[in-house]
Image 1 (cartoon, rainbow, N blue to C red):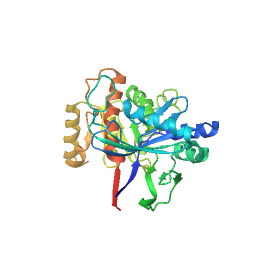
Image 2 (cartoon, helix red, strand yellow):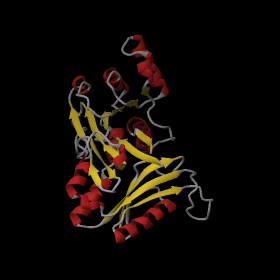
Image 3 (cartoon, rainbow, N blue to C red):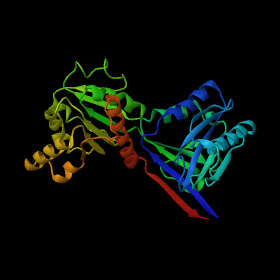
Image 4 (cartoon, one colour):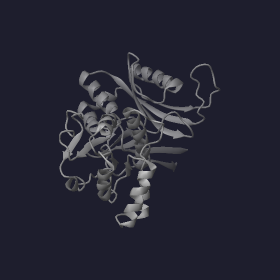
Length: 329
């Protein structure tokens, strides 16, 4: 017999599922929590994907859509009626059909826990706030618990470490920053905007959840660095200020650092930095300029989308480290 134990560590996991569970607990509404606890091969969702199933057939979150989610919903509605948890294992190799056949070719494992709200509003609120790393999971008896840092894999069906959101530092407060910042908040970055122009860097132009720092650039560039993976974006008012920020930021431990501009600008700044020994060729090569994934964007919002698409991809590589332990038994 083979026991599969799954543990996931996530940066950038949104708090909406946990907050929804806290809300259900506050209302006294019974809901079922579905979790993808294992993935083999190609699948429409990843390890740790979650959905909340309501008795009135509403779904919050997603386990992958299509008939995978339809089957999970069927199990969840039954679990809400009987009070009994369920596990499932679906092979995604159905023949292509007219509607929502599963053709990904992989296999997903999951668990359905009815009355997940009953753990209590404080439990789910603590996970939703994500102020510090928290470990939680579903035990073999389907109980939901927080857990000690030392995991005995034989006791758990699934465990997860929730961490604070990744930081996004934006140098500059102009039209690109004003488009990127609110979208980055929706994509679960904690956003800080830096600029020496308080007339632009203020909450008249940015959402209240965006942190704003205004000062001389020398002081701004030396701000204390966060203790979570941090991404940098340089979009100041001109090439001179971009280079000024880059002189400092290129030496800071960003998980990813991008700068707006052309290929020619990137080459010019790179040559200058190496020649003046401001940075090494290797350090310069790590700066993404032009930043973004190049989707032929033209409007400001399109530019924001192509920038953040790249940052989402880089965040996935840095923070969403997924591990699987297989034990023979």
